[in-house]
Image (cartoon, rainbow, N blue to C red; front, side, top):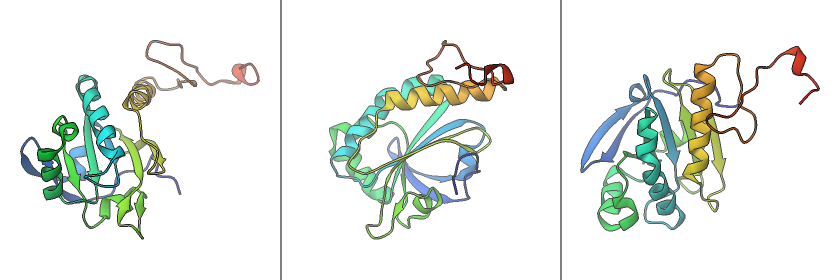
Length: 187
């Protein structure tokens, strides 16, 4: 069963953010757009490149009213240690959520049970707490924040323009489509 259009499940977690440990629940994801980006583990190879790339885009996401969160099955203590030792992770100014029990990874269907780690899963959540974009990668394939930016813009556009849809390769300002009988077989 797909998670698309489902509401995120209840959770409680601790994150490392801005030099502090903070408590989070599903309630923090309501009222605003959010990105939840799962990654396998701290102190690895592809993960810091992805988190740093997302950190580079964070100011633009914030201008769009989007909160960014990273999450792995490491503890919030490990997130702090990684932040203190990695030049790439020092650039991360968004919360890194600890999920040592794997509850969040299971809730979002990205848990690799035999490894105790998450797949690379990216989820865009609307202000109502519903998952609107979901992408899961093999752990050997890194993600690109610019691709995610386009998807978030499309999700926000569709949410604010009922009856319109964004075609392939849609970018902000480009034409959209209004599905109707007149379009059948003409695209």
